[in-house]
Image (cartoon, rainbow, N blue to C red; front, top):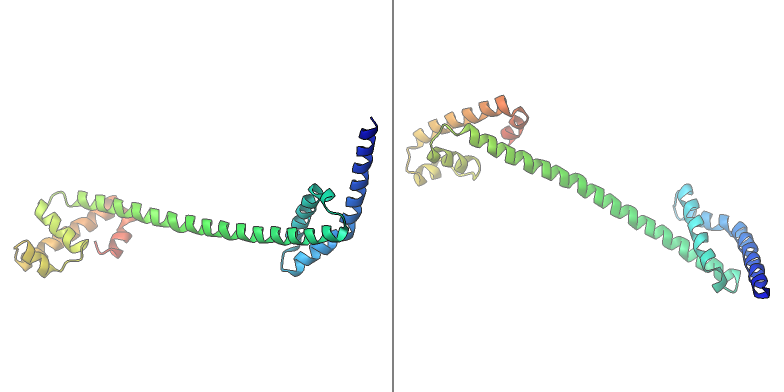
Length: 186
């Protein structure tokens, strides 16, 4: 019983010491953070968190000067941690935005290829291959004419027909892809 009373007295004494230390030093720590460039509300939050950390280790320090040194280090480290966290969040959000844009571009491209295949169904497989060689692979008419052993004028005539067919098909059934097709020179 006697030991329990002594522990309660020690705890009450520590709470009083902590309360006095808190009142004397809260503004000092907060202002130090503000002078470092921390916004006032954030500085207040960090200061509160710093005091919570020192309360957990209160009995490990013999003097208020040691506690104050610990408090300064803790508050500075908490600020650095917040800066790092914000930087990582910004990088993550940026990557999410750019990554989703790339995903949408890939989906549109795949949809465009599928629509082009549907539009070219009436043409022979050989002419479809020719169309893709020129439009997707960027081969010249001369190269393709030589490779497929076809007259260059015949090739131009068929490419004109296929290009018109693809554009018309996209405008009719895939209006949202028409602009993409224009930029990709489909």
